[in-house]
Image (tube, rainbow, N blue to C red; front, top):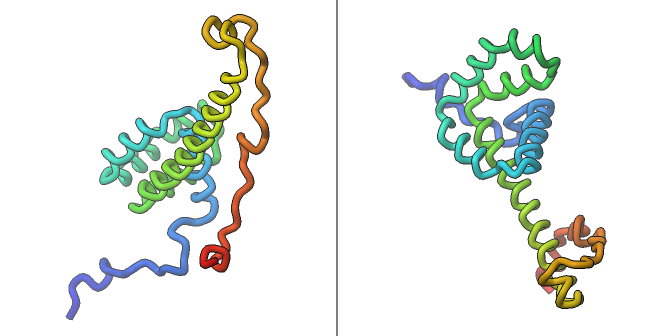
Length: 156
């Protein structure tokens, strides 16, 4: 006789942990957090309240009439339903970290390009900031082409 039979079911590895609309809402939220450059405070806050995600979803139910009166947001209910699942916070954290890594790599490429570009400037442009030329950052620096991962190419 197994007392914990219903509580110990393992998740199906072929089935995605979240429905597509909940995943899209989390993706949009992660992009906004990185766009606002709030990834570190968001990760810190989410890690600290990870055990309380269900209580947060129930608080969202309590405040829903007020929020719906002010904002007409269809994603609010979807996000609330997603928070009821325990793995949602971890998925959101992973999405924020992935988008932040892409943004940091982009910033590094831009800084490297600007450093090389500033070496071409005259001394008064570099140090005094007088008559600074306008710099157009190339598209391949902003959005580099993605490399296709070919397992056969790695073995050569």
